[in-house]
Image 1: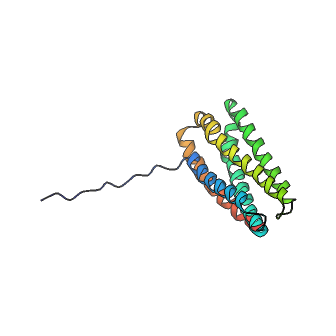
Image 2: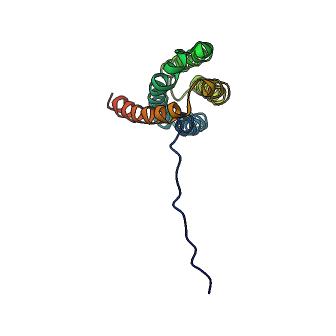
Image 3: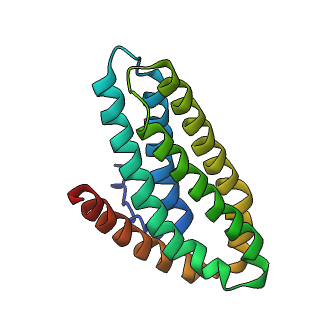
Length: 165
C-alpha cells in the first residue's frame, strides 16, 4: 500500500519593491495599448481610458518616487539613475497635459496618445532594466521587501485620493 503523500506548506517569499512595481507596470502597458487602439469614433472611450491611465500613472509615480526613488537618491551611486527616472515621470505628466488639451475625436489626439504610450513603455523598459539593476545594488534585501509593503500601501491610498479628486 502506498504511503499518503505529505505536502509541505509552501513558504511564500515577501514581495520585493521590484515585483510590486512590475504589477503596476503591466497595468500601465495594457492601458497604453487600449489608449492607442481606441479609435477617433469612440471619443468617450478614449477619454475614459486616458482618465484610467492618468490615475494609474499618478498613483504609481507618487508611491514609487517616495519609496524607491527617494532612498536611491540618498546614495551617491543612485543620483544619476534616480534623477533620470524622475525627469521621465515629468515628461509623461507633460504629455498627459498636452493630450488633455486636444479634441478626443481628432487625429492629433491619436498621434499624441501614441507618443504618450511610447514614452511610458520606454520608461518602464528602462526602469525595469537600468534602474532596477542599479538600485538593486544599493538596497539591502530586507529594504526591498519593506519598501514593497510601503509602496503598495501608498499606491492604493493614492489611487483612492486621486480618484476622489
